[in-house]
Image 1 (spheres, rainbow, N blue to C red):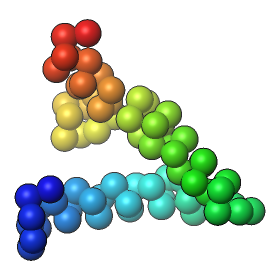
Image 2: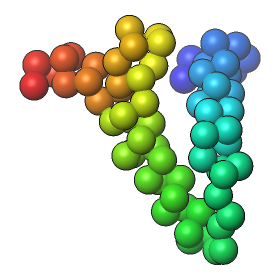
Image 3: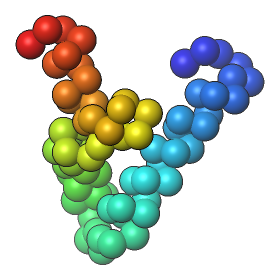
Image 4: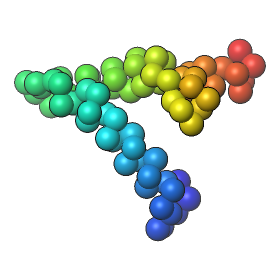
Length: 72
């Protein structure tokens, strides 16, 4: 994050939370907070980072971009 009043950082965060809510949270009925935590973790680690393509990353997943960056 760039610091206070950094509009571009806020836009990225707002976009992520919008995706989280529209693609996952609004389609689930959580019984407990622990279940919500686990399901949101699953969304981020298993779907968002490994399977969901991102326009800003050239239609690649964050996992693919990180592997390219580290030469793996």
